[in-house]
Image (cartoon, rainbow, N blue to C red; front, side):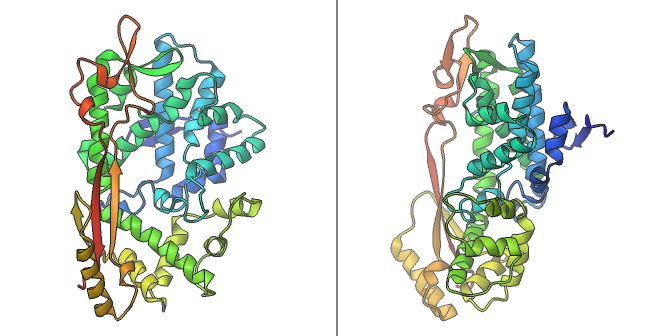
Length: 403
């Protein structure tokens, strides 16, 4: 008999326990093992060389933090059954199971209008059949349909264990210390009031630090101008490949990637769609881009060389949209330089927006000593909360370095 109650050594959190056999079986499932080949941060390793961690790492870390959070709540007198605990761990473990190659970069590109959460739910339903209904409560929690709301808030909210893990993990692997939040302190301040997740009032500064750390990580790492450009290039490459395929051009690629390049309608995913998607990972796209650097189509070849050779276009960042005349001038120079007519495909304005804290959508509540609840920004002790509730947008213009 296999001992399924393993301990995993994680560089971020230390030892992670697998507390039940069903969790071990889910981790061993091919759908979950695929996450070893899905990058957590897309092409971020081209900017921060250490950022080579995967969705597999992140899912295990998030599960560990969920376990820690549930233990904390039980110590504070919150009744959580064994079935609820197991289901919450399974829900967070599988929350990213539907991510495709390079994670967010190609969202909706492979299967039109199929967000990773929609695919995650689809795969969880299929796994639930295999495991004879053991994931039913986990799926309810994932969807926010379970009667006790705080379980879903621990999975997906403005203060969830998903965010706590990816901030600390991405900070560790990129070497950007601004994201290194104190997860243990934040979790120790979590509580439940009226079956909703709250934070003990004395933890306000830890929460503000978490929100600002996330803001700095977005602008310094995830929305770094070269990172935003790399993600945009991936989308452009796949979009161009689909256009050429629709025109009858044959592009060398793995069988699974070819399948998605040729198919355009995904109103209802078929068994073959699901099977091929779960066999697709970052390696399929990397292999294809290597082939396509030599393609006769100038645009596809140029874009793939940018990524594979790390010969990125020049970028300029601004807090305001760029002057259309300035962009037009760049396009004309590109057309002249490369003797093409579609230079506007190589000169593009990208925008990135961030709202650090949304007061209206699932606000973070503080639990006062008298049992009352107030929103974070209404606390008389808050320092930053009222200043991080405004959306900020930055604009990035990219164009070939040759001009």
